[in-house]
Image (cartoon, rainbow, N blue to C red):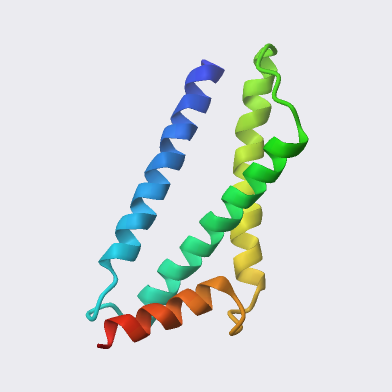
Amino acid sequence: MDIGNLYSDYLTQTATKASNLERTLQGTGRSSSDDELLDACKQFEAYFYEQVFKNMEKAMVPSDDSDANQTLIDYYKENLISEYSKEIVNQSGGGSNTLAQQLYEQMKRNNSL
């Protein structure tokens, strides 16, 4: 198994995840159930945290692509960041001060016009 291809595939999956999330958010409308809309908002919040973590890491740790093992380490770090982001959203409890809840309420107001 080529580590470079594995990491390249993961980057492609990340771009696909962003595209799918965008389509999900655009696809929520008057016919969407409250659960579907809230789930889409939670996906967005998790993606948002994922991007924050990735940019924080870039600011703190210089990248060294010379080591072949670094690619594998990067792959696992990407997965870890993604899982941390989802866990933050799940542990927030869906209170009124979460990004997902605020986004959900705004979308409900806009779609009920």
